[in-house]
Structure formats: structure tokens, C-alpha cells
Image (cartoon, rainbow over all chains, first blue to last red; front, side):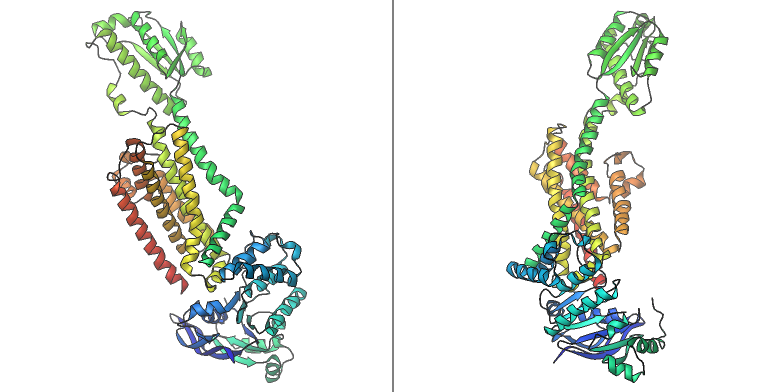
Length: 245
Length: 368
């Protein structure tokens, strides 16, 4: 069953076509990599799927809900983690968990249960009362991810979640993503680290608002006769006419 | 509603973390009120003066006595020469010297120009201006009393003293002004910066993707500042009344009612500013330059609006604080009733409505 379906999804800003008639589907529990250079239209596409932007034309369903008419239901069934850091540095770890849990409508006892679970998984038991600002970036990102799925969403959207951390920390972060996927959470992730693209079940590559290639990393590498996803990406990116911003 | 309260809780926690800002918010009104309240009253109390009395007449004696008996002046010494007076003035021991010429009495009785000179240490022009006016008033009054109605005080503009009536009233006037400024500071400046901070940090997008309604986010951000404002209104009114002795001749409920309306107005302005600005700096700039400067300069808080050029008077009509400050003044000092300030209330309510419509329109387009 598809948890995300898009058909000819398009977004125009005046004369500019940010997203040009893209169609794709993501299966439940799949890790779907959404690649593209800066300015290729990734963020715009993602915002439409999250219910933040109304599409100009086309059709899309997220978690079974229509993006035009049911954005409220969509919001309740998805998690989101942004490349820009979304935890409050002047609140403690525990307070952040409490706040975001409350924002997603969790009850007090649910929040408590989820909090101890998160602390256990991250091995941060003693840090509940530390300010988030005092944590290293890698821990912040792991915490941020844990919080983005605190309400057990059907889908989690990750917008360049691993920006700025070293490969070792990134690898650990991806283990958390695999774990979420095993629990049945669909992961929709944008990244510009192409080694990370290899971890995805399937990837799509966006160029100038269009999806130019889609498939599993091994399929794409075979198709473009490249050894690494980086090569695939370079071949496709070369065809871009839009300037990246 | 649970989501809303989760948000309000988070706001309170964040504001309370910033202890310096909270302390600042409470200390600022106290300091401003005390400063302006006492600074102005002190200026005209027991200023020391010296006398060079060349006439040694009953008239000069009675004038000296009168001056010394008033609460504004205190006789330092009677000197024998002008030179001594200069020294005292230069050292700052006395603030004024009164010189009586030798033919004072006879001249005055003949209706000639009497020879009384007042020399002032005018390092502080405002203070000296006050002193000279008080001094002239007392001297001319005493002259007139002693010599009968035939005597018209020489070089003393009695009429100007009737216009110039600061007494303690300037201090009283300042209290509503301080309240207008501080409420504006909290509600407009801090609210707009607080909301824009979420945008600038990239949190707003995450918040908008969460199931909480956008309007709740904005209201939840405003709630803590609203509550802080109520506390500060209470504190300011209490301080003004108990410490500075500013009377509350109208109803206390009306003072609070109109303060709450103004708080609401300032909050909607803050929210509107937050929809215009994308960075905290821009928000601060718009709040201070477009809204706060006019509040200080054109609201009648510091400079009386009546004395301004016509064009500035017109501009002052659209300064929100002006309507609050003048209403508050009328209620506190003149005991105005609801009916009397109904016009101010209507204008403030209209402004609130207008600003919230702009904010609403801007907020909707922002989401697209």
C-alpha cells in the first residue's frame, strides 16, 4: 500500500515552475531518498506534501489524505524534522520532549512513557535536565529525530537531517532511521550527502523541478553505469539549466 | 486546547529562563517612576540662596523672610558684597543670589522701578528657570503686599507665572507616560521579537507542520506578555500612588480596564510587526523606530502635544500611546469617568481592530 502518492504534482510561483508535474509513490515502511541540487524544487515538493503549501495542480495523497482538503489530518499523521534545528536550546531535554509531545496531543502519561523510552534509546538518561544548547550537534540531531516521531506518525519527513556532522555520527543517525523504518514508519528524506543516498531503499533525483530518475540505488547505478550514487547524481545534475541558489 | 496550553507553558518557561529580561521589565518602571517622580520634586525644594542687601529696609527684610519661609528656598547667608556672592555661586554653594539696591524702599513707594536683582547659577537651565520664576513670584507678591496696589512689580512678568505651573504636576504627568512606554515595550517589542525568533530559527515551519492551529501559536506567544503587562500595570499604579503620591481620582477599575485595552492594542501591533519582519533585528527596528520613537516623542509623554507644530500634532493623532496616556491622565488626575474617556476608548478599539486585520491578512499570505 502506498503511503505517499503524487501524480503530476505542480507548483508555480508566478511564471516560475518550482515543481513541474512530478509523479511518484512511496510504500509503507520504505526509506525514500529525495535528491536534487539546491533550488531543484525539493523543499517546495516536500512542503506541498506536508500540507504547508497548496499545489497549483496535480493530485497527491499523504497517509491516505488529500493535500488540498485534508491538510489538518495530514499534519496529525506525519512527523517533520528540518535541516534548521527545531529544538529549543533554552529548554532542557525533558522540557523539549514535553513540549513537542504536548503539541502533538499526547497525554501526560504518554509523554512520560515516551520520554523515558527516548532517554533509554539515546543513552541520555542523565541529561534530562541539561539544556539542549549544551549538547553536541550529533546528539541534538538524534534527539530531534526521536522527537519528530514521538507521536508514532505514519510518515516522517526529514529535510537534510544530518547537515554539519561527521560521517561516523551520520552512520549512527541512519541506524535510528533504519529502526524507525522497521517499525513501519515511512521515511521521506532529502539529503545532499550522496553516500547517504546508498542507504535508501529507493531514491529520486530532481533536476529543474522534474524527477529525472527514480529507482533503487543499485538500479540507478547500473542504468547510468556508475560505481557510486555520486556519479549518477553528477551525470544528472550536469543537465540542469536552473542556477542553484 | 491541550496543545495550546503546552505552548503557553513552553513560552512561560522560556521567558522565565531569560531572567535578565524579566528583571529588566520590572525594574524599568520602578526606576523610571522614581527617577522622574523625585527628580522633578527635588528641583524646587529648599534651594539655597544668598542675599546682598544694600537697602536694609523693612521691605527687603520681609522679602528675605518670605523667600526663606517658602518650601522652595533656604537662606544661606546675608552677604556684604557682590564679590562674596560670586564666590558662593561659583562654588555651587548657593543657586541664587538676590541683590537689593540701596534706594529700594523709597523708589518702590514712589512707583519707580525698584531695584531688585536675581542672579542665578544657570548651569542647569531648566532648574534655574524654575527657580527664577518662583523667586520672582514670591518677590513681586511681597512687594505688592507691602506697598499696596499702586506698586507694579518691576521686570516681573506675573502673567507668565500663571502659565507656568509645574508644581508637582510634571511628576504626576509622567506616570501615565511611563506606563504607556513600558507596556508598549513589553507588548509590541518583546512579542514581535519573540514571534520572529521562531521564524528566524526555523522553528516556525516545524510548528506550522504540527497539528496546532497557526492562530493558537500566535495567541500562545502573546499570553505571557499579556499577563506580565497586567502585573506591571498593577505595580506602576501602586508605586505611583503610594510612593509618589499620585492620586487616582477616577475609578481603579477604569484605570485597569483602559490599560488592558491598550495592552491588547500594543500586542496586536507586535503581532502585526512580526508578520512584516523576517529577522529579530528587523522586528526590533520596526518596533522601535516606527512605533516606539513616536510613542516617546509624540504621545505627550515628554513634550506637550499642544506646543508642537501643526504637522506634528496631526501625526500625534495616530500614535496609539497618545490616546492611552491622555485617557489615563484624565482618569488618574482629573477623576474622569467612563463617559469622558469613551472617545479615547473607541479610537483605541478601532486601532486594535485595524491592526489585527492587517496582521491576519499578512499572516495568511505568509503561509502560502
